[in-house]
Image (cartoon, rainbow, N blue to C red):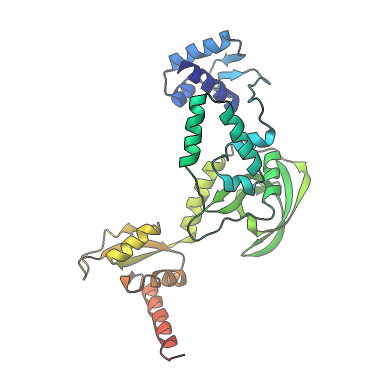
Length: 323
């Protein structure tokens, strides 16, 4: 256990640069006193770790010193974290490297651990694509990935709902969501980070200039915040709907966000439930709710209920005559 913790401290210092004893203690779930003893043991073993006192201090490794994972190439080390996501590794051109990295990693393990690694691979598979969808492999994904790895500026022709225009971007990160690839990037000379769907990039040209990556940029935190903002802007309307038990189950199975309407009184159907769910617009809400047929009834807003009635009248008129 102690040897494993010493290795974890070494890896954390190598990846984070500088960490305090309390921060290491929280990460490893031990006391700061235990961390101090472990640091002493690392230093006694010849590891060049040193501490700096003060509020901004902490422990760090001597500049330029690091451990090496023997046998791993650069592309294999990039692919190592994608070993459990073969589709993503393949899209990025790292499919073979991911397989090779996994073989080298497993070969370095003790015999009993190798069996456990094989067992995990045989019993756990991650498929990031939702039902009835296909994973995208955009034309320019691999070139953009290289630009992200190397902090290299790119000139793109991008098509959005506003039209097509030319942009010079500084690529900061790649995200795959439900089988679709996105790029987090900022326009050269600006601080604002925006999200671009890579399949909407019509042409791309790597530029010779590089950029300095913002030190405080956290891709995961940015993505979570952008998702909340996007979903809030995308679905500004709240529909109040009475749903049957069957439709309620459909909503749950489709993972459609909804909440019970606390202000609603008893319905005329005792087994039905009144819920609130967000919709993008009156047209989108009408189409969405009509897909549930007679298992739902729109109660509010009145404009949405009217829009549903208009759609029903149009459908009735369409099917009033035999073809």
